[in-house]
Length: 248
Image 1 (cartoon, rainbow, N blue to C red):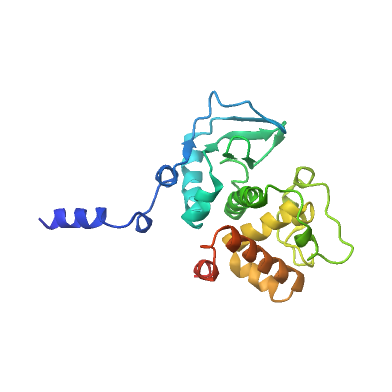
Image 2 (cartoon, rainbow, N blue to C red; image 1 turned 180 degrees about the vertical axis):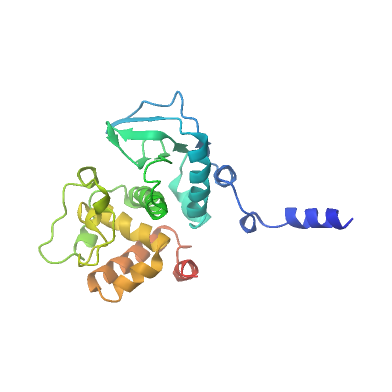
């Protein structure tokens, strides 16, 4: 009798109080999870071709645990606004032959993720998830990704972004760098879209580190303030209470 009561009590728990698997999280948000991409690649887009292969089970299992932990941080209302159809996990993910850890595919309403790429660093993989997620937000909020005049005004006088994330590769690009006034790392300087995505991603993954930088960097402080304003406008649930909850 006691066992029956315990089981019923567990089943009565709200879904958010239980540990979700990635598959359960995707079903909750009506997103199709693809872990065996045979027959999908190569996938042609208006900007280039995406290729990938099935990932080994051991790598998939470990990555899915990380991924659901990160995706569960964001409000359900934000996920709904993105209108994602699929999340595809693929090994050896490439865009036009260039290795990628992730690809936001607006045309097919798909987020492609490589569970092996960057597996040497948990922080790196966590940050990539949110970085690419934000690219979808950035596109959805106004249909523009590579231009943001208001954000650019926040930069140091005379600063100009590089030639985009496609041309900024290498591990040193992603490492946080306190010497770059107004920017979290070198990758942030490659394009306005990458700058915004890095601010967002690091606020989700290591907020205490970002706030420590903000305390001594006025430019970065204004960027964090701007990011929170943009997100609250796009998704009202990303309010002060949401950001406070991440600091715990």
